[in-house]
Image (cartoon, rainbow over all chains, first blue to last red; front, top):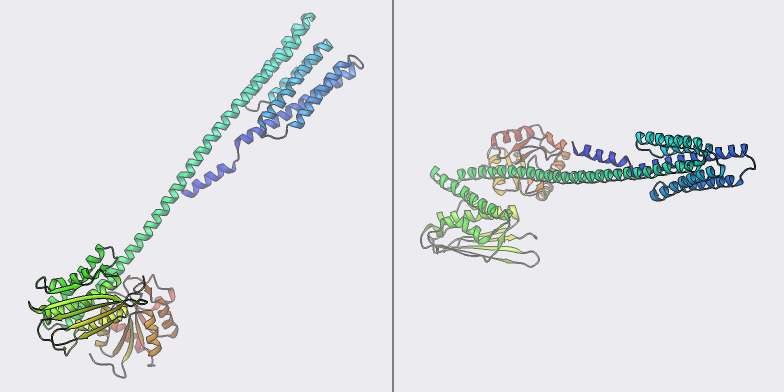
Length: 419
Length: 127
């Protein structure tokens, strides 16, 4: 089942309403119908009594009127289906009063006809008050009518046992009423239990649905992040290949022999690879400047004293690392070919500092000494151009390249963007 | 490589990596008849366009996270021909009207790129 189908199912079951209220409303309707039938029955008997025995035994008329008043009052009280216990009590009282009144009338009248009529009417009424099982209704009708017929038959045979008629009229009906009330309560409790269970199942279903939605949402996010990562990776690979292609072109252009090309090209690619590895190792969160210099200049050392680095804890962002790494690599290869790293005695000092309050700038000083005598090159190769132009081009920095006779000196000045 | 002469086609290359931009300039200019200017950002591209007239442009789609699209739309509106370079290998990032412009995937092959630049500028009268 899909998510939307599940949700629709839950909404449908919500819309079907509260089954307990449904039961209560039904019961109230039945009770009111029953009381109206009682009222009608009593009224007909009363009318018959008045017609046939005008002026006789006025006490019977009083009992009739009282009985009708009680039933009519009960009808007025029964209107709110939610007042389950109250309705029950009112209905029961009206019912019991009618039965007692019937008995009293029988005693006062001294005949069996009136109670018999009312008894049959009550059997029908009690049947209508049990909305649940048609078998219950049928049994109720049969039991009550049979009891009444048996009672009357007994009384007709022996007029002195008249009191038995009243007992016979009252007792079975009263017992039936108690049983019906009990059955109704059990039914109602069963419905309430079923309803609680349904609600709890629905809540479970809803919770499962919410969990599923959360999981789908998470999955969607992960998928989007992954797709982005793949796209980004593709982008970086293609860009890296473009850089490799460019490095190859330039190296080819400035190399005199294949041997020279091979050495220079592989040196540049290895520098790129080492920088990439270091950056990836730190999850692209930049690189300490000391580490970067060590990475690109390290391979050109003759001994521990060839290069000294003094860059106290400056961190370089991964955007800057790529261009700065390439520039430092070109300075190192240049030193290895022509400068201080071309012999054992030569020495390179790299130092750096950050200055400028409002707009901080990273200054890196590359100073060569004790190498061969230096002459300013007449022709600028790719490496030199890279040193001089790349930083200005990519990060708007400034590069000063000096060729004093004791050794090359390079000053890099790079603006640090605000974080 | 010869320095640009009067009749050369002026090319504006917008590419954030110096090494790649410098190589493009070297390859395009080296094929003869072109003189290129390289700029790394979209702001510098607008500045260059304000300072000089260009016959054609070569545009990297993604300039270190910034999209070239506003500049491309500017050129498109002014009728200046251009080609795209992309690392993504597709033109999904470009709005529909800009997709009529040729797109080259990095790393770029020089021969087809230069041929396209010549074809696009041959049809235009010199400004």
